[in-house]
Image 1 (cartoon, rainbow, N blue to C red):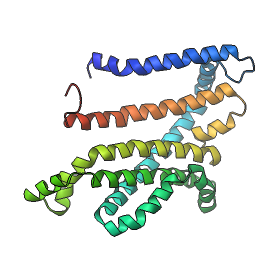
Image 2: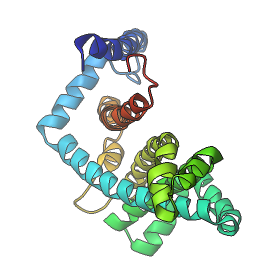
Image 3: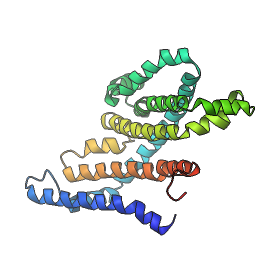
Image 4: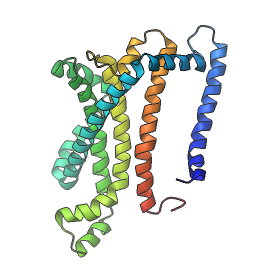
Length: 258
């Protein structure tokens, strides 16, 4: 990536961060109750968390759970979305149930997860999966259904049939929509996992969500942990999904410099 392009991508978010820090500093100086600690106090709490190992250990546990949950949700969502796209009766029967799952709040699954799996790792992972796979299913279904019929007719004219038609024509044409579904499912998985970890404290395996619960009334430590959660989420979205999206748009000539 060229230095000018890197600067063009980094400069706007950096300006936004600096503005937030400036406003934050002003608000902190005007508040005498300690409800809004200064950026310096939050940074000190973050350094303390890094030194005692609580933040790195919690972050690793959370990311491992997230990776597993997200992979399962993507595989399940893409498979179900493809099945619904291929069968109209199944689509009309099952799609409303998937929509119902998507609009159900994440925390509503926590009591059931605890009853079914106990206060264990599986309960937290279950909440993350059930909170994210419906978005992947609906995005896959919508992306495939929005492929222009002309593409399918052209593929059949060139001899593509069955799986080869989907592999060579339908899937490539639906990639932008599926990519959007990946980003949405990632966000849902991240938020559902935080909800699960916040409520279900697995013994000896506390993640970032549980770390929020253990901070008590230490606002600086709470904000430091929340900052780690935000930074990890944004970094994953930019470094993984942002680059994938850029590559897909580049292949279609949708970038200014393509």
